[in-house]
Length: 357
Ligand SMILES: Nc1ncnc2c1ncn2[C@@H]1O[C@H](COP(=O)(O)OP(=O)(O)OP(=O)(O)O)[C@@H](O)[C@H]1O
Ligand SMILES: [Mg+2]
Image 1 (cartoon, rainbow, N blue to C red):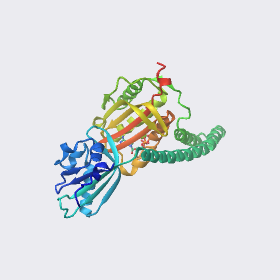
Image 2 (image 1 turned 60 degrees about the vertical axis):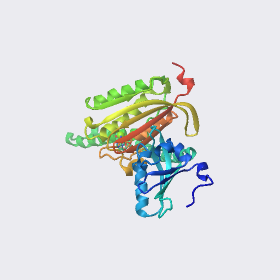
Image 3 (image 1 turned 60 degrees about the horizontal axis):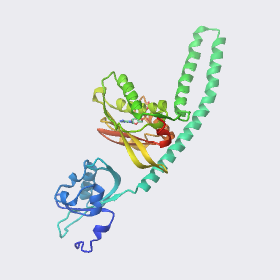
Image 4 (image 1 turned 180 degrees about the vertical axis):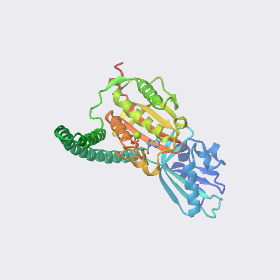
């Protein structure tokens, strides 16, 4: 390869990094500096693993490319920068053989355009909406005859000549009730949220008390609140339900409550787009736990109703939480790896509601 005399690398928007034989950074173009929020002057000579706060996936990509002796692309990788910001990008690693300047690897970092990400999210949301609609239809179909079965069993119980047979009708009634409760949860919260100006910290503190009580005070819940957050329009009962479902999962995923370290964090975020609406200000709530993480095969599907990784789970908690947040015009996201699972709730803080303090 000739040197980049034309300065082309200076002008492309893809981050390009050339690594030496020990995977030390040798060349870095300005786009890579901007994307990774580092200056080339400071990182040249450093090992590639020091480019990011969490570089596991980057290093895996480089390693796999090196072993395969072929270019390797990894799509949609979440990179954690030193600033704490996350960058979603495609990574392409290309091993270089006998390079005249001694470079051993070329790394390209292509940021995923926010619009593209949004449309991916939109597709996902659409698919989830469809699943939810199918399940809701099915739930209604089950509920109607169920009322009939229960009523008939009650009538039958009264007519039974022999008390010993009553056990059977009791079973029918009990199981019908169990099924009705399940179907009610499947149908989800059926009321539109009643929006009132509320203090999100009051909601979080309430759920924290509930969870601590559930865990016999054996759980640690850290807090990192932004006290300057204004009130926001929300339905208190529904938001409590949503946050409780998320926090309860973390508690259930931990081996013992003592192992479960939860952190609640609030921040405001300016100019944020949810779906197709751009909001001037949104409230961001992170619920982070240190548990085992969501199993890989479940990650894409956790918001789909009835998807569960627990033997006694119904798989409805997160689907209900997402439905509630969506009805608030908000968004629920998740990123998980062992030791670090984060659910993020975004809620719009439309000023017409928020100002009615
Ligand atoms: N913080 C977490 N850590 C590890 N796994 C999680 C976490 N949150 C969710 N999960 C996984 O996602 C699955 C789906 O969660 P969801 O709350 O929707 O259903 P559930 O907990 O199985 O049942 P339900 O909430 O209806 O009782 C869980 O079964 C679990 O496998
Ligand atoms: Mg749950």
